[in-house]
Length: 540
Image (cartoon, rainbow, N blue to C red; front, side, top):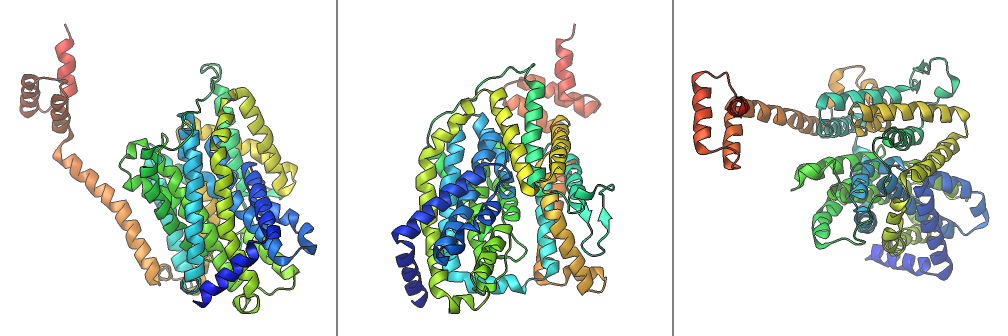
């Protein structure tokens, strides 16, 4: 009851006209900076720090929270429409969302992203209210071995289910891990894979890599095929979600929320891992797995819900422990420190009005985002009617601007071009892009947790499975890797050719007499397949 009373007081403060205005400004700014590649919420909040110095602390935090939530949604807009993620956490959305846009279902993809963001954000904020102490206690109890195991799970599951070949998937993952290693060794301080190029010492920024692989690579690929594949406008399609879309989206929204909030609350968490895991889960559970890779709405609904639920989860360790789990939370903590407020476990006791006003504003910001962005879905979708040469010229401009604005270094522009060519090569040779991005994002974090695990165990490899959570995760990994292998061996042992001919007969492609003839030939000699037999019938 005390928590509910504090929340009601927070709503009373957050619903004042001035705070509602700042919440509105925040979500609009957040959506705008999320749409522009590379100009994410962290940069927007950092740029606004000097402006907010003379503002009320609660009003400034409400605006920052609106920018944070709005940025999460805005990044999905360009991912869906232009295959250009505005944030690393929206990379996964581009996989199915852009395919939906190409199929004339851009409005449906944007709508399920908006509603999923609202549902997940609202549920995540409610969980923040009710279960913050429990989640924080669990997160703190996990050690480096458990974090490393969870990251290995994310790397393997995503790589194993994407692309036409597991070999190509792991090849792309290897490229991503290599890119993630560029920079300074976190333990020895030695430069790695920098080739004497000073700007690489700090590593490659994930925004530059993501923008290059998706935006530049896509633009080069389109340009290479414009002559053989004439430019045409992409159909916008129906403006709203149909009954079937709702039916296929509501479960992924809930499952994505279940992934996003706990991972956001982990000190080594964030939105990247749960969005990847949500995508894998939806592909495994979908009744339409053949649509994945071609525009499955579940592949947008689940990851977007995970993305926004993790935003609420991120605020849990930030408010309760003073521990930021991403760049935006770090800047918000810097603002609290600038205001003379000490973040950490005593924040709830020393500044209850501030904390509960911020939490109440999250409910309000989510509602404002839905009211603003849902009606705009058909309007955003009309961007696809722009002819491709003009559209991708604009993408190249904003991608270059966004990549340069990250560090304000000319070297980033050269890296943008080089990695963009790599993105073009990936498309040319059929390597999936997502494992590469996953390797870049999670690779350095996994290395850090691996180093910590070995330090804690004095170099003993047994330290990697020294925690119950780590053991459980490794068992899950073994099941995921071995079960498909065993099933494949069993299918091969049963004989695939008899199943093929039976299927041809069932489909009416050959008669029963022809089927008997094929089977008798297979039994007597075993040298001819069903296809050889059918081909032979047509030869003179």
